[in-house]
Image (cartoon, rainbow, N blue to C red; front, side):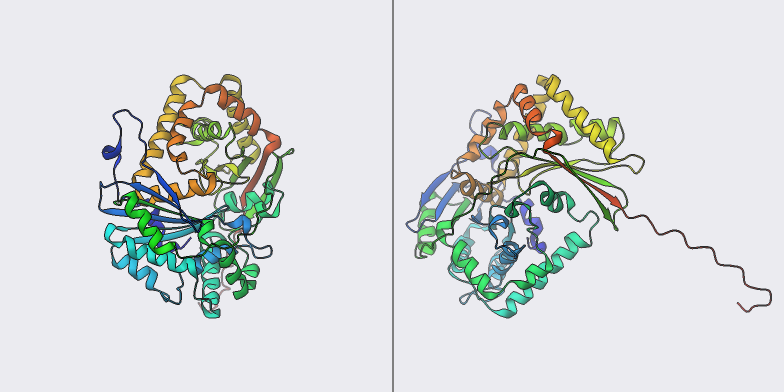
Length: 465
């Protein structure tokens, strides 16, 4: 992800719940889908509550599909997509969008790479021209490649190597939890592998994975389906489909034995722990129960683990959860549900894990009372609808869901899936997945501080100061 544009994901330019909400409490997003002859799937979500648009182009390639011995290549390639084409040299992409009042970004995940923009509706055509232009080809040259290799390495230094805890809860944990290389390698990248990437690698990656038939274009906001489909045809229709390499089998069973790893951290001030369990497959009957269970366990200060570990036993200083690097709905291969906590130096990892296990055991035994389950679901539904108010997030969510599920209409099904989760579903999910044998744990401890230097001896009598 390009660091200088991070705030764009939080920008809300299309607040529109009241405009589109039905008379009932259920909000159905308008979703119109069309596939062009070259295989590009186009999605339009019409909303005229603001004269703005959000655009997302998602390619069905990410860290799982990068070449072996080229860890971080998909991430590096994401950066290269902003370095210009023969028709729009370096800098034109950013200047065109920001000059019209818009913003843009991109990110790489295990199963997809996304490129997103938000701008006034009048900028829609220039944005689509730019996206189509870099789908056709890039300005492949050694200078740009070397520059972006250095940029990515610096990003790793800033975000990982020179940060307390170094992303161990989302980088290191997968290296121990998964067995297959596609799932367990460091997708952020090693310096050695990044430096080994060649122009031939770059050209082949663009040829193989960045064609229209491996992409989804979504537009949300001040545009009609007829207008959106016509513009998509105008700018993307002439790009020829390209063969896409067949993906391998990335599936893995649940783990059968707990894995415990201890790490040291020269920058951390207090110890931290990450406990991760393999999730059910996408589309499984347990996917929604696991999503609700995650919120129940660690969704805010009222959650079970926060009240049990931070407030009650006073073992932990904070608590958070991760569903891989996306959400409980946006993955297309093995992923993890991870609980992350910094804990007090007066306790230890065993005590924290025992407390977590005790809270999970209570859920398995007693389930969840109706009032608590309703509160958790209400919070999840509010968060889901709130994040879809922003046109850029809405377009990106639709494009991701279409890419991963093959159906952007999943956006309107997820609220019902959440509502349908019962206490028995949560008990089943907890007893199936949140078990010790399926768990991987990293205990990250600060390096012992250097012993205090001895006090200087007093100067001898008569010595000069």
